[in-house]
Length: 100
Image (cartoon, rainbow, N blue to C red; front, side):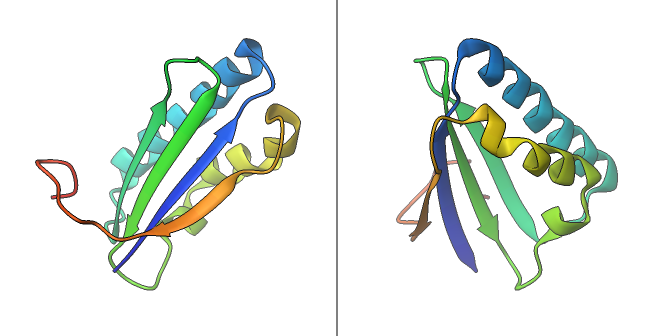
């Protein structure tokens, strides 16, 4: 099992809104296909332009690779954000009804 935290900031409120719509499409497709093998959450922070994704992979496979909405999200990513995202591996210390 591996856990990753990705954080980035959109260039503007407008691009943040576009980003949120694309992220919501990912979750719509994930819920429809129910590929399993991962836990995934995305948060939009109070500043309105910063996003945090938390991904827990339960296997070595990445179910997002088979999600068309994720490919769409990636296509214009560089145009929506103000700089490179930060990627961090993480270790789950504890959770309450978050990661299962």
